[in-house]
Length: 137
Image (cartoon, rainbow, N blue to C red; front, side, top):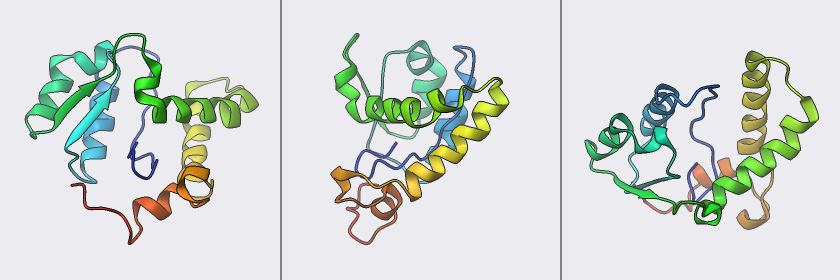
């Protein structure tokens, strides 16, 4: 997620703690630009050598939330809350494939149609691609 606009740049689902799906999402996100800082929690995927090396090799600073400090990454925590209450709990997906399809549809809605109070009741896409976006990359 781009913190400025709340735009979900890339995402993946996995039923394991393997780093592969996180690396795929990271590499896809980096095709959109290079942030100065990349923030994650301290999950094993994000602390792995493969993940941190990918960032450091591109001169991207790494920021990690403190252990047990969900509010350190409040934008992502709010995204997960919205995803669960506005989509996952309503659909009760039976398979991973169903979840991937349904959540993909939700993130399209979230990025392009869902208005955010913190964005002056505009969409994340409006801010992410908008003319008023500050140069961060």
